[in-house]
Length: 280
Length: 290
Image (cartoon, rainbow over all chains, first blue to last red; front, side, top):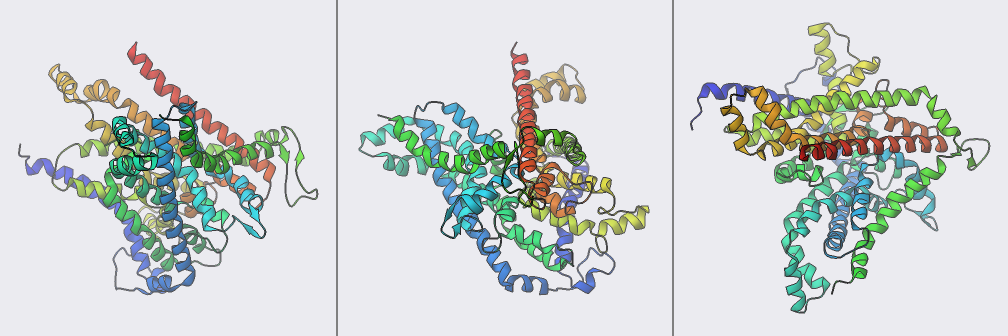
């Protein structure tokens, strides 16, 4: 049925308005990132007057920024890989084996994600600085510390997401592979992983974003070597004077992965954020 | 053929990591919460003081204030998000060219790091060059400065949260709306129900499970909001939510014992709240069956 243009006009008006509401804050940050210090403090102006890239070049050539960026990429990537591997094994166990207290384990898993992270800062801080100690080495300010810690909020979510996927793979396929002489590794490699691949990919992508976005733990459990990009953003704001242009430039750079993921994995975001309770 | 021992073996790495980094900290907080422990105090180490921390907490105006603020923030933000998200989802059920583009743009804030959300909004409201204070002053003669007026800081946090999380509600509601079968809606229209009645008696009951799940997840997230608000206002007046208060007690003040007892109470309140919501969800469903 053809809709008349008159009916579409209010719809478009509404959506253009909503789009502006979404984009203007980001646009303003982009504008700030394209201004020098002097230009900033003149009258607010939402238009870009000239191309000024010094903020970006300053940020990109800064060795601290490079280190933070590397840390963020390493931590998020390793964490996502670890979460995918462990969650697959755990989900397979929960789905295929009769384990005592299976449902309770399942519920306990999700409570790990519900807890307010601020409540656990103190014990984690003490664990990281004192408890795990080999000679002079502690977990504090290491990438491996963050990689392991981020599993606390990523694993429960990954297991909840993958449970539905693995449950959907007929157990007869496992059995057939086993009769053909495949061991556990063979079943996982030739049956489960190929069939669960899309679900695994979504799990990996979303875990990556959650790790990339995390701030509170990274800010308090690292000091110099393992700081991530989000803590770098927060450090920019100081009492003595903030370089707002560079802050904006750095924020724009951290938005890039988010933008890519929204476009690539848009359909799965809701599933990821609701532990698979809501599917599209 | 399937030995449970193999199952446990597969599950063990997950369990070990979660027990070390999830459960042990909880036990630790439980232990320290009943002790007095401040590393800058004259007496070093932990001293058991029973329920003293909790007695102190009941009379701690700063803590009660932070709880009040968190509740106000969560209620206003979530209510606006649900109403707005539902309207937007309703708009997205229509077919029109370019719909998916609008949808992608609308979804964008959802994946932005909370700390970057805070940065975006801070740049908007910063006195000196932010457009919000400038235009409010020029057009409406309103003095806007989140550092000086706690109420404005709270409202700005709420608006920021709405900007960040409304897409989440939109997407879940959209999933819910597209799962509603057509027949009951058509039937109600044939029977002469107006749009409001169709919404109230047909659409809403179908949406209820998804709606409650969404609210449940949003409440969990809203009461632990720290990052974006911290970045926006730096823990200034009007934004000292419970999470930020815990951080202040534990790190700058190093009041470990007291910080732990606040953590415990916050955890307890969260669990109770979630449990009540769970009952609300499952209870209503039971009511429908009967």
